[in-house]
Structure formats: structure tokens, C-alpha cells
Image 1 (cartoon, rainbow, N blue to C red):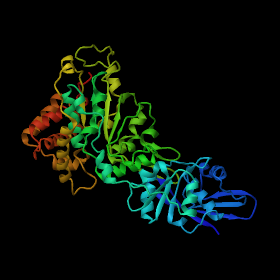
Image 2 (cartoon, one colour):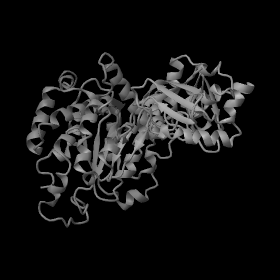
Image 3 (spheres, one colour):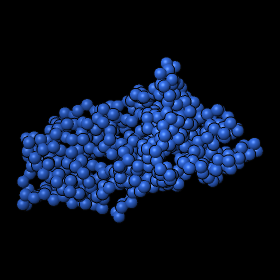
Image 4 (cartoon, helix red, strand yellow):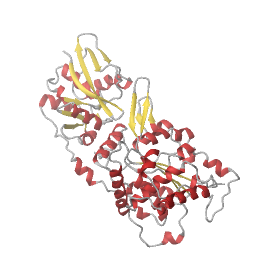
Length: 513
């Protein structure tokens, strides 16, 4: 009689229950796996045979049929090894089959019977709880990750012999228990870097504080060695801490991508992803034959830092335009469509020209006529349109570098950012999918970012005198609203507008000649 075992398949960041039926019958010793398996699943029988034999267990020399349902969903990867092996042991009478259906069983097998780690343990554990399984048996390496989900027993095992002990001898390992809230709050503020490490650059720190407070994208433009990368890496330290929901959502993505270490049960700090400029468009936004999350999804609820922005391929930058607006990415295939969240802050850095010294206070630019403009034009207008803050970074002089004066710590800046975000949370509490000023639509900008007559005159003069483009108008109002929030002001004042106008360098017609 066929034995049923339960596993799971991960699509996007969600898990789908998979029923695995094993039937051993008389006939020529041959193995059949049906139900749309990929090559890794088909090869599992060879791994299972060696694992059972090398563990002192018996592989039946009979006809073995394995059915994986639903049959219209493609089964991929080696994580079904343990499920199929358990079914073979049960149907061949080596372990009792009565309790097997109460547990979800997943894991890859080595030839010596060792159980190897799998991807997506967290979404699988969440689905197992929804499906009311008694427990989840999986590799020991993934046990802490899966145990974040309360209300289901998680058993981490390291060898297939433990499956025999579990069902035959009643020797069950102690369930893995993780105190999610303790895990979350324990490391929520642990950062290796701090804004206080950066000497000088107070105006750049101010711009990043504004970016963090309003969720604005920013681009840092300056010569080599001015501190652009150093400042960008410290941005997560001033962002509001992840809440528990965001932490679980972020952990799910990293779990599916196989990016969680065995010691991490929960991601408690905002991600910071910094892909090299040789990255492909698939690696950035996600995809592949077996769709996987890309860098923009791994940066979900955190920061995506693109250093040397003009060096990225044009196609790579252009594929980010839609995710920047919709805060998600949909990967479509002939048989399926997978959606990954991608709500991230984009921080880009670039030199002002190929040699790096255009507008440098001391060094002379050696680029020829028109070269600077050509270099800047590598970044398209539609992409720049999605970047609210254009920040010019100048080198730090010797006096500031050698100064003993202590700079402001990240935790102090973060307190101001949190207060500003609280104002925005209250402002947008009745608006769906809008949580910060950067996410406002043009209609919302007109309704929320109202300015006085004096402010209108100032903005008009700035646009005429500095030659600002039309797209700068809404961006300036959004940033001014955030600056007013940092000042705990209900109204956008002239001083807030003046500071916001300062952050539109690349919109000036005379910038770079």
C-alpha cells in the first residue's frame, strides 16, 4: 500500500504543500519518479540508495514509484531526498508509517547519510503551521531559522538514522526553540559602523539624515576618496529599526535565496546590499530558469548601494525603474509568475567625470570638452527622476581629519529620524501602501506639500535662476516636507524649501557645462 509523506515547494517567498506518495511493488528493480520533477529530483534515487546502504539500512530491490503531487507544479532541487527516503523506509517496513503523515519532512542527503541544509526553511515552516502539521523535520543547520515560527515543533536532524530512531524507536530529538522577540531585540541596534567614525562631511550627513527620514533615494557625486562609500555604508545605522513583521519578511527572502547563516535565526538589522558594477540585470532584479530573488529583493526593507553608477550597464539600471516605483518585482515565465518584494532605498555614488576631479577645489580636471556631460548622460533621465537628493561631496581637509572633536553618533541621528517617520506614519495611516514622504504620488504632493506665497516666489526664482528642470518641482516639495518633519513643523517654511532646492545639483542646466 502506498505511503504518503509531505514536503513543500517554494515559489517566490511562499511555500506550497507537496504530497509525496511512495509505492513499492513486485517487479524489476527500477525507480520511477513522476509529478514534473527536475533533474536534481530524478537523481535523488542514486543519493538515497547510497545513503541507506551506507547507514546500515536496506534499499528494496523492487519496483519503486514515487509520485509528487500536484503534478502540474515543477519540483526542483535536492531537498526532497529525505522525504522520499522516509517513504521508502516506511513502505518497506523498516519504520512504522502511522505517524509519518503528521510531520513535514525535508532535507538533502549525502551519500553517507548525512542531512544537508536546504533553502527556504522559514516559508516552509510558516506553511507547515498553517497546514496544522504536528512537527517539521529538517536539517539541523536550518532548525533555528524554522523555529522562529511558534506553534509547531521543529526537529533538527543531522543523519538519516535519526529518522529511524524518531519513528521506530520513539527517540525524538529535543525540539528547537527560539525566542523570536528576544532574538529580535537582542541584536536590533548592533552595528559595526557609526556616523561618528566619519570626520567632517556634516552637510553630507545631513543629506543622508533627510534621506533616511523620508525614505528618499539619493545620489552622492564627488571625487575619489571623498568618503562617499564610507557614508553610504553607515546609512542603515540611522534608519528606524526593523519591526518584527519587517524582520520576518526580510528573513523569508534571504531564506529562499540561501543567504542565511546557520547562526542567524532572524535578520534583525536592515540589509545593505552593494553589488559590483559588473552585475547582470538578472542578478540585480532576480530571475533565472529557477527564479531566485535578486539584489533589489535582498535589499528589501534596507539599502541598495550602487557605487560607480555610470559604470553599470545601461540595461541593468533601466530594469530598476519599475521596481523603484512599484516596490516589487514580478518575474514571469511561461508556466508561472513569481513576485518578490523590493521596497528599498537606493543610494548611488559616482565620480563627476572619468578622471574624477571635475569641480575639485584643488586638483584640476583633465577631461576634454563634452566628456563630463557624456559621462553623466550614462545615467538616464528617467532613473534620475526617481532620485530625490543629489548631493555634491567635497574632500575633507586636513584640519577636519586631524580634529579631536567627536562627531554625532548614529543613535542620536536615528532618534530624530524615528520622530520624523512617526509623523509620516500618522499622516499616511489611511493611505494604502504609502508609509513615507518619498512614496507620495503627484496628487498627494499637491494636497500635502502646500507652501506659502513667499515659498512659491522662492521656488519660482530658484527654478528660473538655477535652470532647474520641471521634474525637480515635485522632488523639491517632497524633500522640503521631510525637512519640515525633521524640524517637527506642520508647515513647510522658506528655510525648508531653500535647503531642499540645494539638493537638485544634476537638474541644473549649467551643471557640468
